[in-house]
Length: 259
Ligand code: NAP
Image 1 (cartoon, helix red, strand yellow):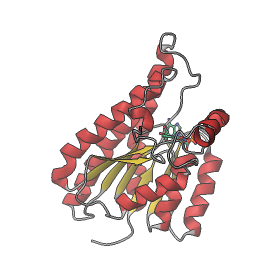
Image 2: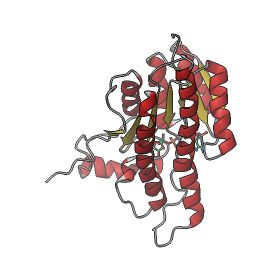
Image 3: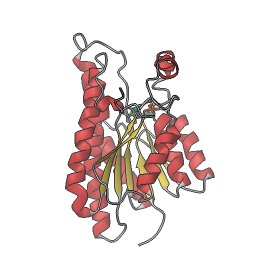
Image 4: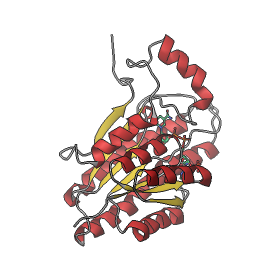
C-alpha cells in the first residue's frame, strides 16, 4: 500500500475550498477540485495544485443532485484510484436574508439541498468507496471532514434556513463518526467563524465593525481560507488519530463565553 493520497474538496474553486485545496496540495495530496458553475476559477486552482507538484482533476458537479454526486465519486476513482479524504465544503448563503416569520420554502429547499442533503449523501457514497478500498488494501485510515459554520449553534433569525442546514451537518458528523469508526474512518466537523471570501463580501462593512470596533471575536481579525486549510491538513496528516466526531472551531475564539 503506497502512492499519493487523494482528496475530494467540494466547492474547491473559490474561498475556503480553494484555501483547503492549496493547503492539501502543499501537504502532498492529489486533489479533485469540485465546482458548480465557475470553471475558470477551478482551472486557476488546478494550476496552483500543479505548481506545487501535485495532480488536480476538475469536476463540475452540483452536490445537491444525486447523479452529480455519483459522478463526482466515480470520476475521482477513475482519476486517482482512491479517496483518502472527502472534504464537504461547498455551500451557499441565502440569496436574500429574510426574517424567519417571512422567509419562504424555496430558499429553505435550496439551502438544505446544497448545504445539508448534498454533504450527507456524498458522505454516504464516499464512505462506501473508502470501505471498499480499505477492504482491497488500497489505503488505510481515510477521513471525512465537513465544513459547517458557527451558524450550527448561533441563531441568526434572518437566515434560519442556513442555520438549520449547518446544525444538521453537526449531527451528520456525529452519525458518520459513530458508524464509520469500525472501518478506521475518522470523521470531523470544522466550524469556521467569519472568513474573508466572496460569501462574506456583501456583509464586509458590518463584520469589520463587529470585529474591529466591538470585539466580536477575541482574536481581532478576519479569518482567512488558509486558516481553515491548515485545520484540514492537521486532520488529513493523521495528527488527530484518536479523535472522531470532533468539532474543530476555526473562529478566532468566537465560541467562547466571556464575562
Ligand atoms: P464561496 O466563496 O461562495 O465559495 C463557494 C464554493 O462552493 C465555490 O467553489 C462554488 O463553486 C461552490 N458551490 C456552490 N454551490 C455549489 C453546489 N451546489 N455544488 C458544488 N459546489 C458548489 O463560499 P465560502 O465562503 O468559501 O464558503 C465555503 C463553505 O464554508 C460553505 O459551506 C460555507 O457555508 C462555509 N462557511 C463560510 C464562512 C465564511 O465566513 N465565509 C463561515 C462559516 C462557514 P462555483 O464558484 O462554481 O459556484
